[in-house]
Image: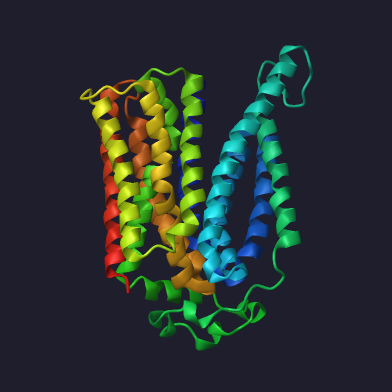
Length: 409
């Protein structure tokens, strides 16, 4: 039955979130030891295999195991990219490169929705006009979703080929000035001058020793809290269609398209602000964070007042707030914590530190998603707790980033 299928899929989603968090916890040291580019190649190959298995799964068990494996492997990708950036670009290029990575992630997300929607529409039109398709395997059952996963598996070949052609064969040597005094106490001095080939002999315990050293300082915990809070704020995207449909009266199609405004706000923010952020003075960074995260907090508070019936926002204002939502959190979410991981972790622990941030972020996000999924979404007042939490998240991040600038050397 439909209810049984939904319950089974809910269990799979819960398990996949757990394994994604586990991946964030355990794969960081492996990435730092093996190097990011090598791990990305392995991850892309494994993703292609798992997605291919899903497209041909004969039983729900096969589908579920492959789905969980996809999330586990995917958990390594952002940290591996950061490690690859450290090994392939000069330090002054890091902010702009991280911004480009964030742009690529958001652009890929938007293109995926468009591409897969067009693919499903094509299959639907083909079958409705009497055409045969290999994805209609069982009589009376639409299995066109298999085409989405088959295409997803095939697409993994593109970044794999690009990495094989353009990735440097040898990464830059480590530079001593990226390692602060605390790390020098726990990392062998030879790591500051060894080549990429020599670095491959490092133990998986080295990234953990660096993480332990960095975690003794307040900046680590302030970045962790800020990143975790903004991860909750950023991931509200999955509930935007339901919000716009139930609280603003938009059609399902228009409500779904509102997510593109959110993505556009993210793209514009990271395109304009990512590289410039690192060049700002301490006072200017504080002002920029106040402007961006203050706007984020105000957006959440306005939506809180709307769902509580204290003010009434027109649908076009609700859509505009989703654009502002995406633009206001993007730079504080992507840049400060990623730069901290690169600068303090270096080649030997940047992925470990980044994954540690994300591990705690996903734990917090799992709790929020459970709350948001359990509310009565067709009742406006039911959204109140969600927006109260989201406003608190952006305000918490603002306080953490402000403190970071005040205590920085």
